[in-house]
Length: 331
Length: 258
Image 1 (cartoon, chains in turn orange, yellow):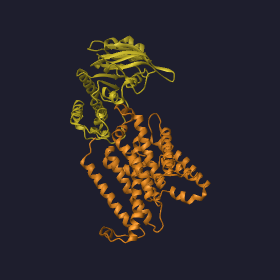
Image 2 (cartoon, chains in turn blue, red):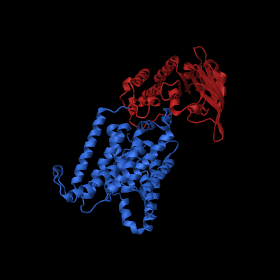
Image 3 (spheres, one colour):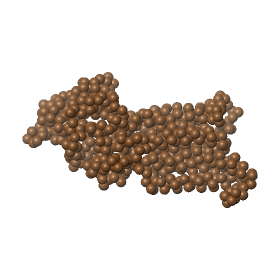
Image 4 (cartoon, rainbow over the protein chains, first blue to last red):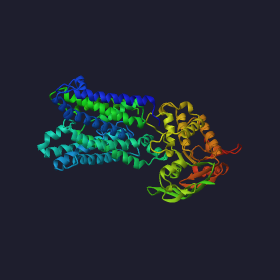
């Protein structure tokens, strides 16, 4: 499928918005650093430290997490052929967080070239959950919204209770794990950025490479098969890549819900379902959304910080209800 | 030349034989109809021919090569299938849907070439869907949609076309239009196998028919040999009249209160 001028313009606009949001987010915080001063190069040493050591890594982490969540939302919506799918709603985020909590509880934290074993445990938890929910939700070759939501919620509840159980058994870390679970980028540093950057780029490239296949899969698996798509292999690759993206986000920021639902939905209304364009647009849109919400999270009640997951849920949950109300969901 | 050759094909589901030792050949340019009552195994037979389910016994040769020997994309270049359920929950445009028919010829991320565009334009013309190209697939009527999906199958430029009840949801004018088009395609060299429940459409348009009964071949032959009083009574268990005054046999229902 071809990419039209309108679509390229929207990608460019999103890119400019991303740069603007990064600049504005850099200047906002407990210490306000006027943008003009930054451009003129008149920053004090303290201001430089705040920008390079604290704000920039956190903003980049927000961008990566937003991109990962939103892209994995598009992927799950494509595989499940259902706009209500999102890593949070189908329980992949809970699975990844269980992986992380178990690793923390049993002291299985190792580092290899800056990559923490937590990322691996998050990935394992995420991918097992996605396969589980997929096979539970599938009835007669289709995945109806009702069974998708019910099996996602059931699995999610089960895994969340396990996470709580692990937390209580290990009450020493209770507050830390609790805060992380609500979804927060407060611990974001260059180390986290380096840890998830390669995995997120890899995940995105796999998915983007399969954009055409993803388009055809939307016509149904039988039709995709007749059009020469190796359905099972492609679906497996997509499930792995989608879980990788979502669980990397969870590994560094806990559970941030609804980003993967809201961003692809809005962009699909504007751009249509062609994944060649929907995927990059959603990646950019997710990055922008999370930079903006995280900036709100750390400034609105400053010096107290809110977990950003609270803000995305406060905006996202009503949106979810609105989608359910409409029900005649347009793709 | 035989395009399709089916030898001793059997298929069971939950220990019940759905397809039982079926044999037939289809030669190039034929419009071959598969008919039979509900539950006779018509759709299962078509699924076996489509390679989406595998028979437990027997072989299916397409262009002298066993179906399972084909790589996925290679098969999609010689075999196009139009399944019965065609629900599309996404707002693709008609043009986008038809373009997807070129998938078997494209590498990942390869764009549509000028040659591909010609094939697409030809299919849109043949199916009379050019004016729909920019509309959304879910905004057009059932008849238009079926023509669009047929265009997508044509774009695959396959030697063999398999259709499952292509006109069951359509008004008579569209039924005629689709079958006129299918006849024309076979004259141009495409081979078509179509599953039908409408005996008169089958009789009017198909070169040969296969009458299936409880998974077994009852009769294979030209419509005059297949659509007969005895065959219909045997297989469907009801009395009809068969009018042989026209070019092809025509089935009339006999109602009891006459």
